Length: 510
Image (cartoon, rainbow, N blue to C red; front, side):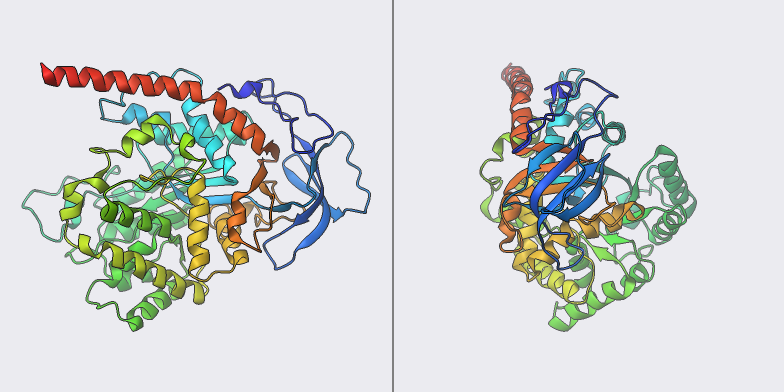
């Protein structure tokens, strides 16, 4: 697939064609008029019917009644009749598959695959997000090569040389598990270093290195001991970083306890499951404990990314012993490398070791508890965001955001509240200096055009007519066409993987 051939003129109902995207550095800024559309700003309960929306240089310039004449010379016209314009969705917890991750992989079936030099693999993932109306994605840590790839890709998208969601790249900071082992195995704890800190000094150094590298936020992970966790969270705050990640381990001499973690909170907690883990210490999960836990989060000021669909998918793999099918129409967006990662032995959720671990029989109850807890958080006004943990087995990029939105609707959030969780709340978390993310004049044009009213039925968020990504219009037909053009590249990857499997089988047979 070659993005240089991408033409922006085939918009839904377009009456003016924009020039072709000729090459890096010369992407058109874009001037668009969305005609006679219903605007759902999402920051209030307003619904603005029959509006013309003028977009220029990546910003919403004007929102006016359809009967009011707008000067829109040379603008590409997008027919909004019967459609709904809402803020673009954001996946607030994702692990994006990149070419860098493949290069870093130790799996002989993956490492060394010929990926070409056109970054086609990365582009397919970006298109999958856009197909679902996801115009922002926060990557919560990966390998060194994967992070390098994402930082490069973030810059290319921001500069208009690539199409994709706005990327927020997080740096995961974690200590060695042995440093917080509840049952020490007798092995010495590895010496502290910024790559795996066990001291406050190395935790601070890790945050400062992340600032130098240009990361957008910090992901503290659960095997940071008490002093290092505190140092990472505090230094991140001093450096102006958002923190979103896992709560620290409990139960060891150097671990944080629950009161300590809430007294020194991250900006955001990356899973409701993390809170469920905290609740299990000395608790019978009584309703009073759920209420107390939810209140502790509210008092701390932290927001939460529940990732309910993640836990539901893990439970399904545990119970059914297979990966749940992705929604209809999305199978082809799962690339061959990801499909391989979803199968044994790479998929640990289907392993016997996963089934045999302590507490595995409580997985299903844990999902139920996370739903009840998330509802309690919502009722206390704790800001919620939509995250998926894709590409965890069974969760495809893009469409899994829709699945999580449905999860939140089912626990009681109104459709408008779900839309806020999927857009405004994430903008406030990851990009607070860049506006609210609402459909308002002056805001960035990261928008979704829907064929049906999402306030009437949240499932209508799946009826995407097109997106404005960084202010550039892509109809769903364009996105699908670009995805189809990348299928030849993915078939080539599949053939490479199959040859490697065949060669490995021959070696075993010999």
